[in-house]
Length: 167
Image (cartoon, rainbow, N blue to C red):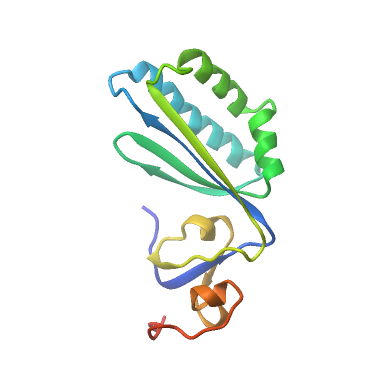
């Protein structure tokens, strides 16, 4: 289990980046032969991406519930993400197998969302959390001073609505 870091923190990224949310939904629980290969393929892709940082993945978090697996990924650029998806990497063969085995039969749902984030056009806060999300992909910093409020983290000025607890 990840170590909780007491206090208030934020993340800082150098330059622009991409947030990519990808996942699958099990629509027919008993069709294990259809959804298990999809779930297993994601593990292979993540191993490949972490073994080859030059492919552009900066970090990710995974989320599971009874029917869904969701990964929030942070990428260096859209070009890195697109290159990984379209070139001869694990994704392309997994995508081909999915289309052959599942296609549009409805047993397994898949989804992704892509967000292009300009430098400085984001803000985040982590209170009493392990290093998580964007802070895991970028730099984990105390949320004090110019990083104390959401507006300050976005480059503006204001005062905290409530006193910030001491770290």
